[in-house]
Length: 118
Length: 112
Image (cartoon, rainbow over all chains, first blue to last red; front, top):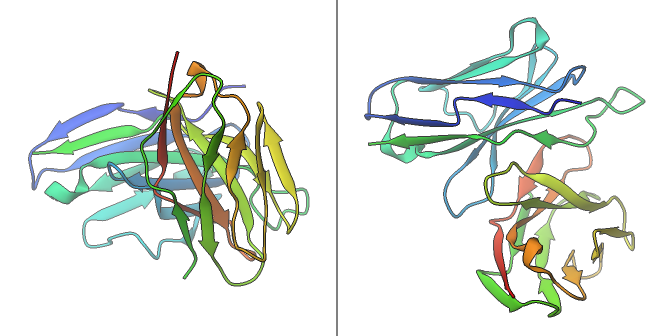
């Protein structure tokens, strides 16, 4: 079974520029997550989708970050304009729903997209 | 809000040494607890989990017991190998949702 695919693996941009990251979850997984992992810290949830609807975006800096999951499959995370403090690894994860369909099951993570903002 | 605190790293051990990485948590309700591992150049992988008090999760020689009385979920392994060198993250999932809250991670290096 193919894992969670992310691209690009690495991106270097100047501050105030924009960047987009793409994620293709494991086939059939209803729930998709974007996490931000700053060097030396644990991952922090930015946004969670279930199918194509947003479940939790309480920690997403909405003035500069946006995400979409059209058609409930792959997803794009955009940062515009980027700041120095956005330098981090952006992790995408997906999970199936449990048998009851009420909760997400185990999370499977992609390898991440490393962003450096100069 | 929910939080996870891990012992500060990095941790450096010799092969076959005993490993303990401490993890304590703060949460309302009865969260599920997890250990994730991140090998160099790879994504996070679930190592083990426990969903209720006194449960013991185990995998690849690693163990952790969910201790509600001490709000802890310490990771242990009796004899580490060089291949165990990685960053280990403790995490919790709140009772009602699916969001994972992670600790800051502990870098483990095992020398031959």
